[in-house]
Picture 1 (cartoon, rainbow, N blue to C red):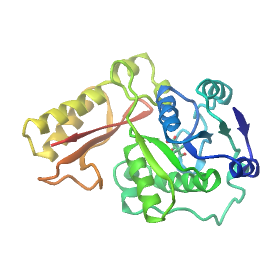
Picture 2 (picture 1 turned 60 degrees about the vertical axis):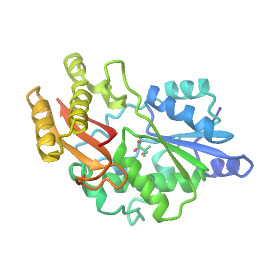
Picture 3 (picture 1 turned 90 degrees about the horizontal axis):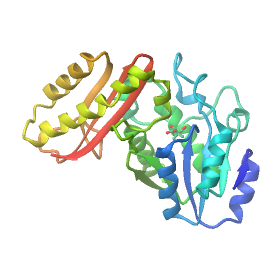
Picture 4 (picture 1 turned 180 degrees about the horizontal axis):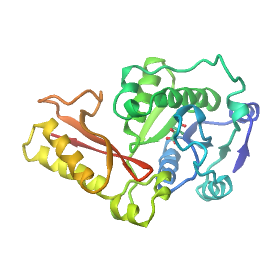
Length: 277
Ligand code: PAF
């Protein structure tokens, strides 16, 4: 595996490479990321993984500074998985200008769900992913379904801006107790870690209620919020949406997704389940 830090070197490599599948990450890799790499291997001859903690997608007071940076351990894991290129640019390489920078402005979806609580987050994600796509020029790119709204924003971006990259969604990796794998899980103390799987359980109960005929989505969402609040969670939202568009779910929609974001202590967790009504 080659570790490349500059755009120029990456472009040089790309000119003579065959097809490429790409996995963009912010590092601190866990089994969920390695599942993306495994899927990427099925998509193309070469695998490129990027590690870049993207300041642009963190709001004020969020965890940009304490976000775990573990490049050496990450590189060892990627080497073991047979990755060809680890692209690890620094900030000056990716964002050489301090102001007047072009950004990718996603549509209204960026202000809903997580976007309502993290203003500018999806603009930051879309901008860095667009830049990385232009640099790596992959044939395919793998994204986890845990970040369901992120996946929708990226799918919309490549479609609307005619970016020739196949977006490959990959199922959420989970711990044995159901907790969705996330780099942020390591912020949880022992008590919070024991409580954390409730988020997935509550989403499963919501799915079950819809499947057994309850179509009062607002009531189900409210019930899920209360379940979490009773156990010490601060809930940003629990919402049932149409899975393809992420529009508010209407009676008659068949493909649904229930999404949630909630905090345990200082740690914000997200999760979702796709299902058919
Ligand atoms: O999902 C992530 O880790 C990040 O949002 C991404 C896609 C690497 C962009 O910084």
